[in-house]
Image (cartoon, rainbow, N blue to C red; front, side, top):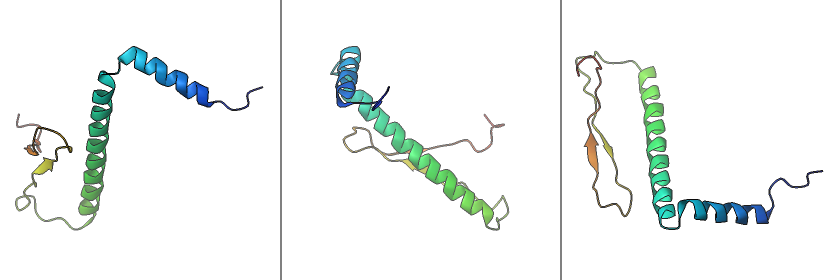
Length: 94
């Protein structure tokens, strides 16, 4: 009954509907923001993975450890530069 679920003309129709709904001027901005989001997600996942590896090693006393300030890198072509991110480590001191 169903040969192939997705044929080439389905993709053409899908792209046409997306261009009509969002407009050709907003599509590059949407793709750029999606790329930035993916980069941020990837870097956060890597940071969490590295943090997990560090927590498995013997830890130093909490007084000696100072949290390293992380920097979010600007994407190529961005007009903003890299900026340090101050993350609250203790949620009770806001």
